[in-house]
Image 1 (cartoon, one colour):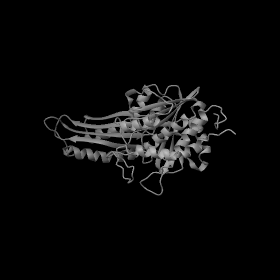
Image 2 (cartoon, helix red, strand yellow; image 1 turned 90 degrees about the vertical axis):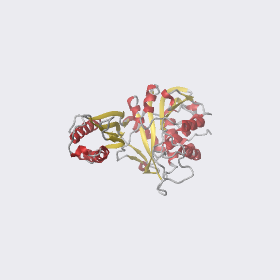
Image 3 (spheres, one colour; image 1 turned 90 degrees about the horizontal axis):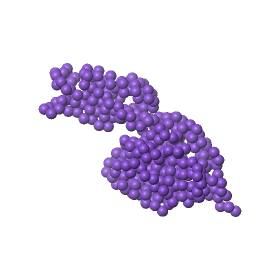
Image 4 (tube, helix red, strand yellow; image 1 turned 45 degrees about the vertical axis):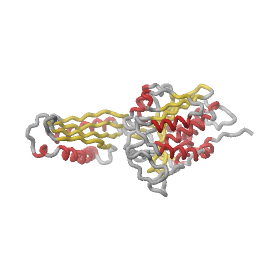
Length: 392
């Protein structure tokens, strides 16, 4: 009797490896461009497998191809590598070893799932018709990694780019999806005022510029909510504030940097115009400026491919474990740039640990690996007595 390769059972057996790699990565939450330890760990983990490493512009991101025995479509699987500038509050043996940085966005989960999925699928490369292209994406903060991937022509001729998010706000065992835009467009915003004339001002302008800038950071988010409504998914997060009084070398100035998150082009445009009006009104002066630079487009799930991916989950999840996402996620995603080139799909995997508030449930790693490997096996596996097939 032919041996049946059941991807689901295989993934479940890999849980110890998934957890071990995730914990190694969790201790080194590096941030681009300083990803040497993270990249070395990934490269070493894949060194003994039949993968072809592809060149990437600037060499910050990593890309590997698993080519099947026969020609066929290319499917891209993507995981982000960057840690975040957030202090870790959990207390366990594998805490972050980098002061002031952590894998708070669960990119260690993404990487471990993708590495182990490649290792599993490599064992059955002769049954694959096509190419599995794995991208480990750098540049989460400025989204430069995605641009490098596009400029390296690594998305050309691919059918789909697919990625997973792991969310500790979602119950473990639940998979969430979103039709249409699931993550916002991101604009880098600079609010600027410069008093070049040094002329006598009203009482408002005689205040300390630092105090004035601080006041603006409190006022502007409230004004945005008043203008666009509290239910409009629009958010402005300030990241840097510079201000100083006039001296012999410079005029009085205020410069505030932030990021605007919005779910439509019109909302972004209207919000930027509103910020310009606020600055001119506050200072009654032409020496104000609002500079806006788009960092990334909104992340939009391709409806046709999302339906296909959801159809592959019936062997993994019950119907009540696959749920539509009902709340907007006000955080950008470098993966969204791939929308500009090919269809994209991203699912959210729940990893909430109900027993420990500051921990995540590592069993979600098995969910992630099952989803990745099952989707590839159903779309790229050739006819074989040893493979469970699903035709599309």
